[in-house]
Picture 1 (cartoon, helix red, strand yellow):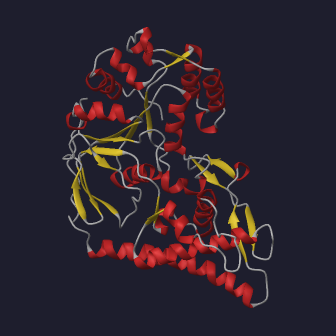
Picture 2 (picture 1 turned 45 degrees about the vertical axis):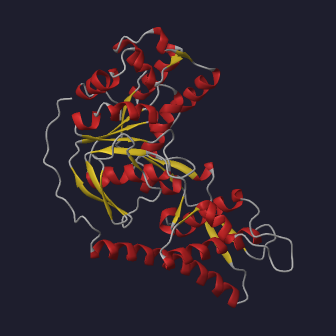
Picture 3 (picture 1 turned 90 degrees about the horizontal axis):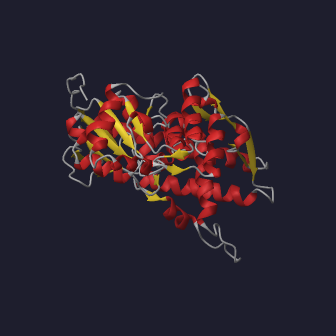
Length: 387
């Protein structure tokens, strides 16, 4: 792609500065303050002889809406009271306090654990009974989400992480917990995206890229990396390895806001690929309470488009017949408010009318490096994308 050259951004210190450490302390202090406030409120209610309760916004579909102005999915203000002196709620009240206490310990000791490990940290048998505080992780995970919503803090700010997923390579230098890493020197394996990508844990030191390309599949990322696409086109190449994990979404959102680079997304030409793009752009219903810190409204859909079949003279071998489930899902997506624009309606309807879907990997039916040498460069050069 013939791209306009830009001067590399000024580099930041190669090691965490005092101000960086201060920011981290400030963030932890703020989160600790929120946890302690939650506990003080419950204690004050109990001391007065009242019924300790927690008000938590309900994470239900009926309490989720699309904010047209911000262009993100948001959680509404409807709340549910979780009361201690209520047989139906007492267990969850106790579990919420246990998880909050566990997170307070983690922050105080400046340590992080997985959500699986938090389950074991807070699981024990109640004295004089055979009842456990948690019987399964399926109980503790929603409590963690409740705590996030209840005190308005990211899971990562509570020093909790999920399994990491995603790879990056390209014209960017980062500082990961004190280690300076040049993403242009990561070889074929790339840099694994950390689960926690918050300021204080991760900083952008020096950027020389002109745009970011996110591809859905790791296999496609490997093809582009082996062909040194990021070097030839002066960009950052990232794969979410399917539906993007929280770390990848947070990293992308920070890149968009702090590096101010255009972001292009390449997914399969089917309703599921389009949904992956949709989550990156607007956020998800399940994590609507974190959209402001994870969604990237300006991310651009580069493809694969339903119209690429004719544009690039794809052979019949690239076709995969649509299933009834595919068609139903596509019709559902047409009804999404963020896809109401005529161009999006045309794109989704074209997939239905084609009667088939295509994987990005199908570009190899043309030539092994067709995606690197022709497909993506032409798309970028022609500004052939949707937003």
